[in-house]
Length: 100
Length: 307
Image (cartoon, rainbow over all chains, first blue to last red; front, side, top):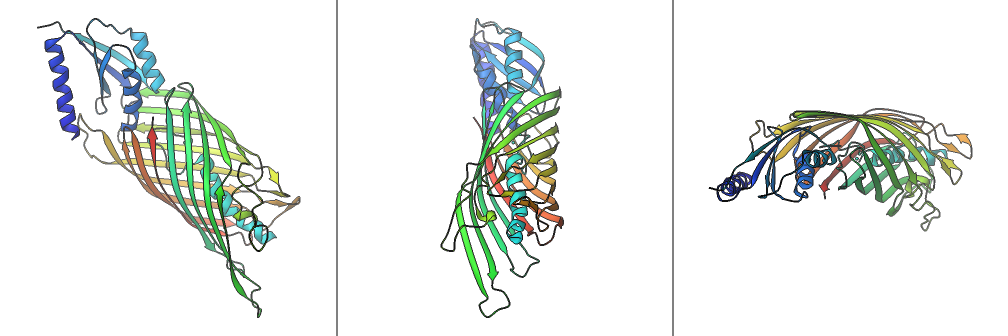
């Protein structure tokens, strides 16, 4: 079931980049060590204006975010959300793909 | 009367377990000080507990059965500071032989139920070192127990003995330090704490020192994938509890206090939103004073949710 959800989510993320200009954020989050940690990270990041989807990958210690077209998230805002969730933001990568 | 206070050793060990043993990530089963709480988030833990004391060295052949539901609520004030409250509901039954070795010898059963004393504490994380897929946290905690439970319940025989009361009537305070080290494969939590017990009804329970350690190892999945979203942990905990003698009307009770070492195997299923857990505390070494009633076992099962 979770594989199906992940596949659907990945398809959604991919299709969004194809048909819109949404941005993909890839966050390296330190201290992410168990499924129970995921909830708070995903909840805090989802509360940021413009964030459409959030998905954590425990194995890689990475959180993927999809951000709406025209929205740019200040690093400080993302860092604070991660800190409030109880973890440490290591790095942010932004992939900005235009409409096709 | 000494015998009565002797019962209390085990009951206090149980109370101590409730106080600090229910609060940090996957977190231990037998203590609560390590429960993880994000800023502005709540965590709720409900634990059903079955505790038996029945190895009585006195002629009264006492058996104390304590069933409890312990509710713990935690709130993250800041990323470092979290507040917790824990309240138990008890159902207690004491069976004992009265007028032993006489023509009037009989088995007597007395029981009660109700809310126990409210415990509240704060935890401040003063060291946090996060790395990729591992974390180290060290926190201090301090709190108090308020006498919200009833301490003067009666039955047809008269006022119930102290171990049967659901509350103690006393204000107690406690403090300690807790450490968590966690990786994707395993987690270690350790706690040192001290509880100073107050007096009520001419009775003062002995102060309690505890050392607890918990080891949680991921059994499933053995190999993680990109979409792993739940863990099954095998848990092994050890709890060392030392209690001073109780005082009755200012006099030390020789049939109270002592040291117990528990080994606690358990299991924990961890998802993003909830955790299911169960463990049984087995007393592997009990060095209790006089005729203090010994622990038989303490079974704990319950769940935890984030919201």
